Image (cartoon, rainbow, N blue to C red):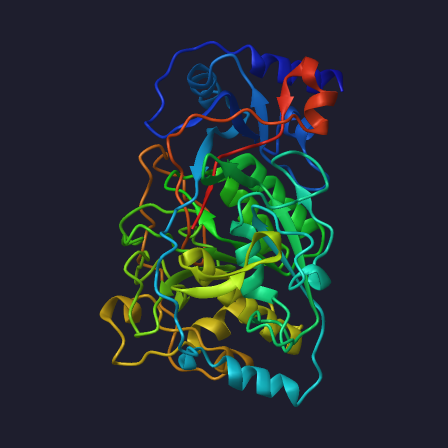
Length: 452
């Protein structure tokens, strides 16, 4: 403990000048990971696996410059601010049944068999309306990483809408059903974003904590309907931790109408084979006008325009639009597959979903280039429509703040649903670690994210 105290005190006192990039971050904190062969790493290692930590410092830029020169430091980065991508809520309601998604056939297939094994999905978002009548029956106890308490009550609505796409109660005459309504389902709400003057935002460090928590508490799927354009190696470590423990990571591709092959967008652009990056399509077989796309970086498209889902105060909305709501469509389909084939690895589930997507020649070129329309029935029955897109010759674009070797060690593929903004960080309630270690300046990891 004395060694830990000494290390953290040293980090808190660093004072060397060095400019940072234009991306905004939380002042007075850095995220640092020590190399596993050092005494520092051994002192700070989490049980069984070293992780990055958030540390309070006097000056962020100076601390980063100093730490980058240390032989015992694997990497150091700011605690980036992330904000949700807002999409106007007046997109026309899609009355079509999204036939190409194949949900009715998938539900019919399951109806003729056992409902399958229970599937646990962690929704890392803004929490959930804990008393919503469409969701209460499938909700597990979660956690609020933004406020460091065990009540992840949604004050923004985004997480509640995401949860509804996945698991709103079906067959109860309310005109609303989640994709995975007919299997044994558990949704674990993990809150790291909250309402901030009309924006849904949160810190990277809290997102990381939520991902580790989800994996360590039995999630088989993580839904991440958020993202940012600054590369975070620490967040990639968290997603890789999910990969190494067999957890599928479904990320929204973003709402900027950008090509993610050329424009940095994370966590979706992490080249990991447990990541599915999801674009949004409309009912006319077109990529939604707001949706990001990419031949290599975006893997599949799903309904994401004018959707009906759950909302705050036990209500519903018919106007949910964004890649934020396309991602849980795919997470729900993944749950259907896992319920029927629980022995599949996360990579195998991903392959089934991507190879079974519909590539209708009448679709728009951007939709076809982004993996086509997801199809639940093909994924369930393991029907292969086309080969996977190889990412061997693609290097994800680097954010301006990232080092040249920042993507080393990645594998697989990505997409995303939010971007990091340069807004000023907000004050946050301290967590238990901060209370216990105030004198040695150790803080939980945070970053600011926004919904898609």
